[in-house]
Image (cartoon, rainbow, N blue to C red; front, top):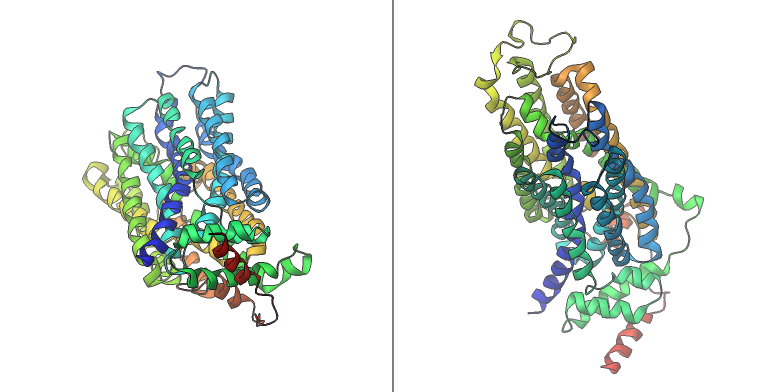
Length: 493
């Protein structure tokens, strides 16, 4: 019973926090379905998007997120992980209302920037909140819940986009943030943040709620570890930023975030419907649901195996698998004869000579769907959840807020660059050359992980910090004040 309590309560809190990540995913995929309507000739000319305006609509969410990340990093340290998550609901609701009731393009753009601001806050706060309430034995699984929730939001957006007009689709986006406020109100703040702020009684209450009241020995042991860590904390100085315990994790986390986006995943998600349309599928909205469903399947599997196989192994194997599917997708667009009206070629010299554009797309469009499905499956199995999980566990507590912000900013900057330049890359490199480029970046991601990333599977947050800080941190000279807090807590009851 104690074991179930230890795991069950933290799972409940993790799923509640993941409502913010659902909003994040819904916002990411919204443009895929909405652009089909907003670029249609039947749409009101005041809000109709033409040419580059569509790519701006897709990518402006990343602009908002770049500003949301530092706000999120500051808020989780200043006000707590829980309050930061609660606050993000405000820009989410405001942004969706701006989009749904837009009277012109400026309101559409403002709505995307505002929801992007909320995405930036969530992308920092949700992984940190979940990592700090999770038991070390299940931190990998629970850390992946945040990514699973993002994919759930993608699926919701894709499915709703088949049946709903872009205005109603925006209103639906306001539901998960509202639910987040309602349910998160009853969840505890993380013990680590409470101890950093010297709220020992509240920290113990949080641990008892998360771990169960009948496992006092584990609570005492974990509390002692947390207090020793927070006891070393003080404001970060320049020498701290240059120390290996911060610089090495920061390089690893930023590198993972950049290579995650250079795989081309955001371009595929944001433009899923148009990609399938170019590939010859008539009902592109409906077919693009497969992208979200496959990512959901892959992330679900990752939640089950990530604590068994390890983060490093998953990243290495899936890098090679993703590159193969991207090369295959590029080969499809090189070989097929594009359907009428599709622009899948450029002046770039063909690499496949006489077989270039020699097969009707209707005969080999199975290759496109197989490559896209497998790419999303492989991505969701590793490069979707693992960079966010590593970000939430690799930094020391005193630097978790600012370092997580920097890593997340790097991710969103990469999102913006990849999304905004996607159409330009297709024009200059051809659509096939674009996916071959992303495939090459996946191979570079393999090299990066192999060279610099250690394995963190099964390690506590303290043990992970020790990987980068070889100094031995002793406990004997520290006051055991948490034990006294535990005794006082028992006497109160």
